[in-house]
Image (cartoon, rainbow, N blue to C red; front, side, top):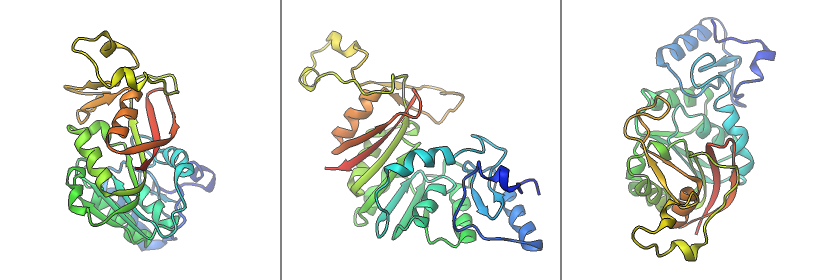
Length: 268
């Protein structure tokens, strides 16, 4: 039962308000099922003192550390319809429901083996009504009748072969707030942009295209950090420009490190 931790150890992991106590054979069956469904990407408390991924990658503090960054950006969730794009094992979707969201839909394309199965299992164990679907971000137009007040679009952008297509698809179903997160090229934890009048009509071969603040994406042909599922890594100016081009307005920027960005956006 290596997934059981003392209360002191447990505080460093992602607590769930809905976590229930399991004992005896029920506890053993739960732990066995967690093992069977592994590996998990998200580590969270699926039952009292039982975690999904305390010893695996990307570490026992994920997604707790991401939640601490994102939670202050969220609106009052009570009564809202929410969409979690790239939901993985389901932690963020489940937290949105715990925090009062009226409905939550979590989608993932199946890139992570068994992610949606894990998420559905977690929702069942925690008794949280979240609709998890194996579904591609590119197909969000099929959900156009389901406008969402809040969309989480985190940890997905740099895994997309067609990032603008996906961002436009997100905009088509978002009527309120989008929380956007991506890895980026190195930055100084502040957004410095060229003036729009200088970038709106660029001549062929213009030296401005090589300016460090010109919006740009680096194409990944093979692997990025050993990950073969990455395609484009933007600079933060490209993040800003692409958000604008898809009819979102950036309202707040968060710089967790000098190689990633979180942006709270409003649909306009």
